Image (cartoon, rainbow, N blue to C red; front, side, top):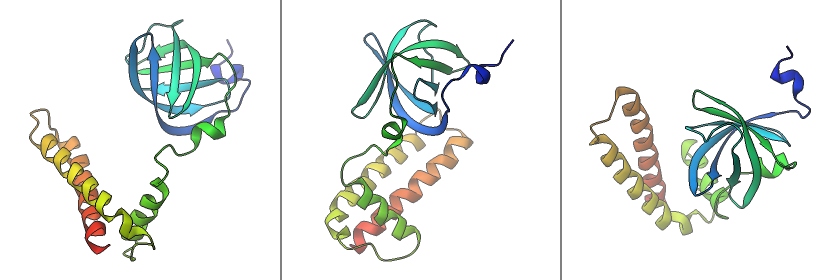
Length: 169
């Protein structure tokens, strides 16, 4: 028996992309872990049954597909047509996302924020406040675990970094 890798006619890119899988009236947030022109490997089930017709959506991009296998919270899709993998792996975000990313990168390097970052100060402050609220709600959750607590500490550090950036701007 030939392996699935042997049957692939298009090279695959290992990625880590958020997307939405739409099946009828149900939408499921998923992670695309592997992508080619004709298919994808998804993480995040539970998925609809094998053979189900679905649509994978990322930002303003979408493609019709069929679930060709699923197991253990993972699924394989076969697209109805070819996609432009380069378009799908572009960073999805609002048009000012790059400036926010640059400002955060400068903060991590202990450098002053780039020119124009002052305009983002108010929105960075709001982001920090939102992250603080999320952290507080998660910390109060009865489902909190040690592993999640470690991730919560990372979120809290990001909130502090955003607040510092906002106050310096």
